[in-house]
Amino acid sequence: MSVSLSWLLLVPLGILFKMWYDKNAGARRSLPPGPKGWPLLGNVNDIPEVAPWLDYADLGKIYGGIIGLKVLSQSLVVVNDLSIAHELLDKCSNITSDRPANKLLDFLGWEFSLVILRYGQRWRDQRRLFRQAFRPEAVYGYQPIITQKARQLLLNLLDNPEGFIDHARNYPASIVMRLVYGHEIAPRNDRLVYLADKAGEMVELLLLPGLDLIKVFPFLRFLPEWNLLTGFPRKARISREMVKEMRDVPWDMVRDHMTAGTAPSSMSSDLLERSSKLGGDMSKEEATIKDTVSIAFAAGTDTTAATLKTFLLAMVLFPEVQKKAQEQIDNVVGQRLPTFDDRDSLPYVDAIYQETQRWHPAVLLGFPHVSTEDCSYKEWFLPKGTVILPNIWAMSRNAEQYPEPEEFRPERYLTPSGDRTEETSEFTFGFGRRICPGRHAADASLWLAISSILAMFSIEKAKDENGNEIPIPGDYGGHGLVSHVVPYKCVFRPRFEGAEQLIRSSK
Image (cartoon, rainbow, N blue to C red; front, side, top):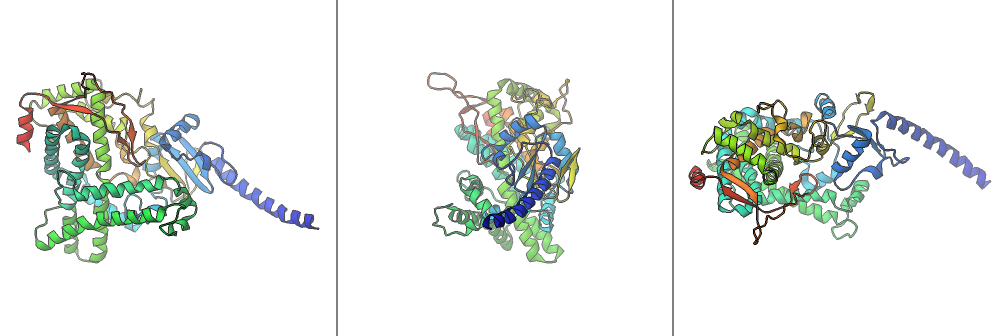
């Protein structure tokens, strides 16, 4: 009797399982090609925990430029091909611009961030303010400030060349802090820069062992701080406190200066003044402004610093490129400092900037997009809610588009006669409605820094006490969101007699 009862229970369960499996197998077959997954679990074992851009690029060699995966009931598509990314994320951006819900980042204190906000009114409000402040016409007005900070960068490299990694970090921070809050950072150990750095580092929590448990069992984040299972609550509290201070301190500083009538023009003060003139719900608008400027501060420096450090590395490793750029600068600019007016006359320098971003992108795996409707690409079907991951690294390593991709070749962006082509490395800034809204300011900041450094300095490998060149491994590290070159040694030599005086007088 018990055996018969067991069979009566097993048969309907088996039927239900087969119905579920057939349904998901059909959905799985409709996704782009990818590795075969397990029943129920799908491709859980195919989701890499370390350097996922590399594993996804390897899968692309097997399955092509778009890969379909299934994790439990979640559809995931990895895009390794730039043309496919344009089709899905640019041309279909009206339905592929959402973000996945991320309770972990919310719990870490980043729920306000434009980068991770889901598609909706709050995101649209922030994006409107960001685009208003960093549109190309606005960035043109920022050129004097960017120029001032680029001159300070040259002086820092002249007086303390050994600290070039720190200078590369402080350069974009000084620009963003001045533009966003009207704050002039201290030469060393600025508190606000420290807060932005530490708050960003706390995002590493998402990649630490044990947090997979949090993703599967969200209730674990509410365990007491002393629990030994994850240690997450205590770390999350520290993160929230750090992010809160990062947001409140500069914001309160701007408000105090405005009250005293001493606030310099900045994104914060200008938006607040404009908002007060328009009237309406000031509390809501102020909250939106605070959210927007906070993420401009937090996200606007790390990627630019990483790219600038990659440029310096490339110049040391590829001295022939450096020499060719300096010859063009000497012919066009002479023995003075470059300005933005020189950009069109320095196509090789501009190509170096483009190639720097391609050679080692600051962000190797783009932030995930989510489809808000069913969509398709060629014969493949992407159901509503599909997570779409743009693999920037794989796109930058497409040997058909970029032959010998590990080589640093600015000529990729030049015609045979040496003029700039229409091609850019803008894909490193993202896609569609989620493309980085601060990219025009980053572009201006990086180009002027690159051209100014090349004009004033020769960058060479350092030598040991025996006169032998110290090898540079050229390795990269970071917390997985932004990739930074591992510190190394190099030498900055003024290129011509009078260069030092020119740098000092320009500041």
